[in-house]
Length: 355
Length: 260
Image 1 (cartoon, rainbow over the protein chains, first blue to last red):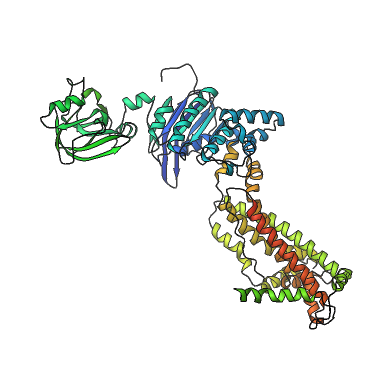
Image 2: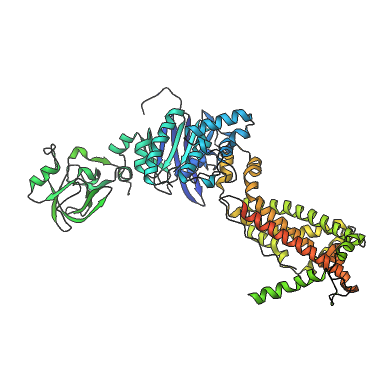
């Protein structure tokens, strides 16, 4: 993010939290601007949900503070902060109709019946659930419950909306559809979204900024492009771009101690020795800048995510490298002796954090 | 199976049939009549015993529901050490022989010089009913997702509002089941009642019990038949309440009603 005149809406400053002696958050800081879509991305157990619960006020940090619109709300009760949550399991009240669920926060504020009715139907139409007002949550499908949960959380126009893996329980098709809708909704409402997921595709598709989380800290915070193209650490490179992390090998393919190179599998080519034509077919117009081939032995070939992923072991240091530059068909089989090539400018030198 | 059911229900059926028997002795059938039911409702001491029993059952079940629910909610929230020991202690009275409970209440009320009568009855019935409500509500609470209450807080409810609008309605079926169970327990209790009642306060079970000494008349049969119907009604009501709630919560397991 470039320097901006806008004050941050939500600030997390040096948050720390332990559960039963295990440190879950380890000095975590973040500043979110008004109307920003920020995704907390990380594998399970990295502290994402704890961070969200601290922002919501459902958990108290051991140290650090939370500021909302410049005010310290670290120890404010959940009902005393203008932040709403879409829970992972939706947490719709089972004894209330869709209408009553969505109107719950308005009734607490003693708004008039007419006003409540209007706001509820407005919120329901935003998530395209107008005709379900009288249903009970048990009479809705997973996707519909999810929409109602979102309507319930936005009806009160919070400053910040927290979403805890809201699409986790939906099937792939519905998930993609909801990604688009959530993004539309966020633009339309101009609310700051703090979104949790462990799905890197989801994060890359939706976010203004992604905060990649590991072991209770953010390893890197940046736009999707920054995170994907210029990962700072070996974990970010591996988690977001599924990159090969080559330890002790320089971008030029030389042995270099203390260096960790990250190169995504689609930028790696494997080809039979003395078959430069094969190599040329893999790198159509960027042949010139390639490194001299590193000898390797193919260990595995399988389909994943609609393309072939071929694994090989480098002879130089025994490191595994994966290539997905072969489309859906390749004559290579396990045991083949091959050369590995890539373009040095596609390699990013990262900080080696051990994973 | 048939044999077991026959064994269980034949005596009840006989009592109901003989409640319509014209003859004053219960062993010989001489013809059908409603007389005993009419006499039953004309018997002033019987009616006042019934009234006492109803008041006692309602008062003690309502207080037990109130205290038991508070206890269950408190136990589920407090993260105190020894919580499981406390839970065990609070449900122990279910296992204690009633004769001991009766003795204990007698000694206690004498000690604090509380006059025996309706008040002592209500206190003792409340106290032996609490564990049933407590257990049922606790089971319901522990099976309940705590994100419901968190969602309520998140949407702007104070702790009390969240409890009243979300938690309480969700555990209500358990509270009602516990109350019905408490009513049934109170209505059939003889032993504890005999220990703690005053000279002038008879409950229906005590009345029936004392009648046995003077000989069972078809009037007693009629009374038992009515009580049986009332019990069946309560049981059906209780299981219907457990099932009818359209919700994501599992149906309540009703503790099999055990007579002391």
